[in-house]
Length: 453
Image (cartoon, rainbow, N blue to C red):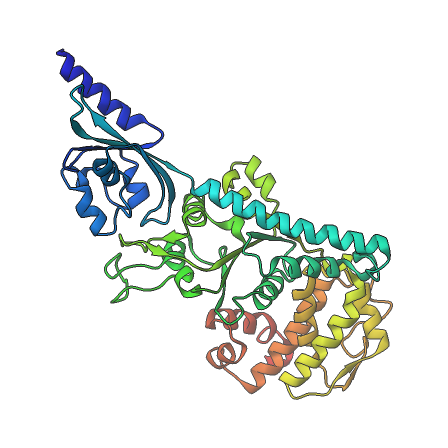
């Protein structure tokens, strides 16, 4: 092999396998070589820019500014920090290629992506601010100016103190807790207390969307992207969030292939619609929530470790309702007020009923308590609701499970509503459920009852 050809092959291999993006031009600025990572930085395939001119690309805003163009003008080594069209921040160093006769033959530049380093620096600065606030709070406690500790004020006071601190700082937040503890409520509180409060709040349950649809639902799609795609395409949830907040609930249910894409979204703050090629920049805050142990899922290779550390800068663990029983009375009062207003009622619970509510485990947490109280108010004929009215007697409490009791209440409610809306279609519309679910519940609770035969 001739020396010249061997040198060309060595150069091509250096360009291909280098960690940095390498860019080579001739003396007029025409591009001779570019590594494949050019696409990651600028959104254009490296093969497409060969023989194009850097000064033209600079005018088009693709290279803005062009360090190679600067080197060709000054014949000196130049280094700049550049923001690319893909939202990446890179350090570019350019070097003139000069022969023994001091003639300029071209230029070569090396680009290194520092987006992640810049992000980590900003994140660390934000976390440092939060830690400073915590230290100030601790000092106040020590000096007796804090009133009482978070523990004395209840578990949720501690949660809300964190919410206050992180709401106006765009740092990633991960909400952890059992189903029904109020993770979406806490996410909304963060949104409402932030500078984004007048912008949209979009809640997405990653476990409720079929796997075949979740990518197009999250990122949107272009017209003709797949069979059945709407004319003109459709915005995804990320675009719909605009400058607001998007809550990715049940993040553990996201398939692994989409976890990779979400990681890219978090790193670049850009998305591409399904079937599209244009880059869409994001300006929304992303909050994630889960009722699963993500570290356990990482060990089982079901959740990406790099994504976990991306979303878990600030973790807020929301305790279950059984660990904050002091809140049950307040919740009961609030829910009674809400449902009395909704259904134009004026019903109350007896002290015996409230005592019974406080003794339950509420495995479904606030959601279960909420559903239970709504059903009791609707199905009870009394304005003062006691345990006897809903069929719970002191001697029966130990033998009747909560599931059995809720089933009993649901059956009574379905039977009552079916009398007013005597068809599965009407009943489904009134209850906000599917017709098939309505038919199943009619068969379960109504047609099997002797009184209905």
